[in-house]
Image (cartoon, rainbow, N blue to C red):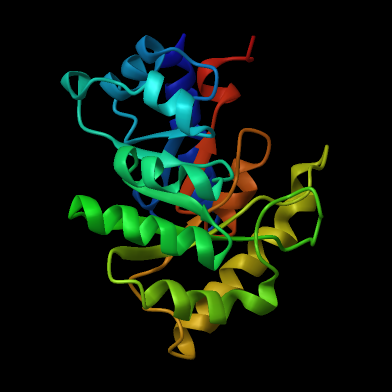
Length: 228
């Protein structure tokens, strides 16, 4: 089932990228493996999925795929509690959901203790929904400066999760705004041009996210099927 779903996903990525005049190779799938078994994640890796994402630290520890099934990056894609930062720095390659300085500092300390450089992304909350993690757009520049000052973290880019809409086109302005924000920050010299990743789009709206510039799409249901 995963193989057939992945083939369909790749076709849709090609079409969405073509609509925007983009190279489909510039878009990577993050397999959102929440509630999935280790064996399921290993199957995804063996089929060429480059990134496995988890929402919770404990589940990520328990269900981490074996490297024997192929190379992959391990990403934290859920909100990270500060008291889990040290463990997260140990098990993940990238934390996509940085939204406060204290957590960033704890990750920096944890990565430093391990002698590693940890990839991170800053989560933006463009709609200001109180139930969602992420910083307001207005605080992005200052957060970038703080994160870039931490020597054991490498800032990769920005991440967002727009409001839920039945019509995915309604999410387009939020995706477009994140791309514009990234581009403005690069032009102004606040953001390193190499820190240009945009993690945006999930099963219900990844095609429009790609049209608006997403480089990382977080896919669960469309890859693994409905969660139990």
